[in-house]
Amino acid sequence: MKVAVLGSGDVGKRLAEGFASRGHEVILGTRTPGNPELKKWAATVKGKVFVGTFADAARQGELVVLAVRGDAALPAVEAAGKANLSGKVLIDVTNPLDFSKGMPPSLFVGTTESLGERIQKAAPSAKVVKAFNTVGNVQFVDPHVKGQPRLEMLIAGNDAAAKQTVTGILKSFGWAGSIDVGGIDGARWLEATVPLWVRVGGALNTYSHVWVVGRD
Image (cartoon, rainbow, N blue to C red; front, side, top):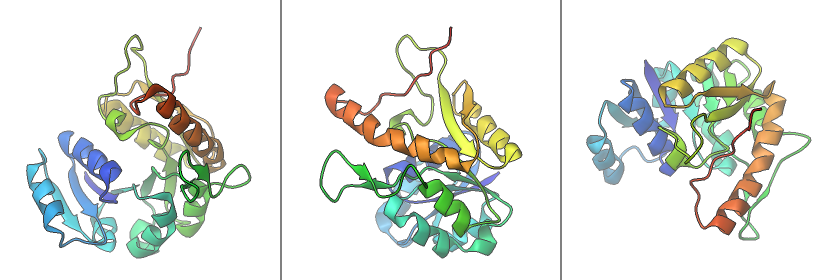
């Protein structure tokens, strides 16, 4: 299918590469579609990847991935256009990280609301599913942790069918499946784990670690 990835940073690029590697056509949405470095990158990706504006990508995409910085999430949704997102599954990869006081980050929204909920309100006709936000981008596709053969992604969202779609994508990316923590309000707690994930990464001197839910 055609997948719109909104965001041209490391997270967006990694997801674009992942979708392209699985045979999907990807339109990377960015504020700078004429950037020669982005076009050069797109030419090196195995598969079909095109570069356009947020609105171009969202309009063409059958599925949309929001992969920008947390403070740029709502402006990106606005730039993409509500009409272009209506009725579509919107995978929200963002985190409301606040680096204003340096490292480690805090959250600029949390516990009583989440960025995922704000995105759902900003695009009320989209089917927002929080996913990919609790792991580093190196583990998005073909995840691997020594001694852990079963890795599952934590997800949240209001639409059951949309979450099934995202779970299917996760499996195609090499995940064992997903753990559904409930409605989009569950994004409060998925986002809240990320500052801890950053602290753990600092302690381990690596950001390739993954939260693992142990099973008896």
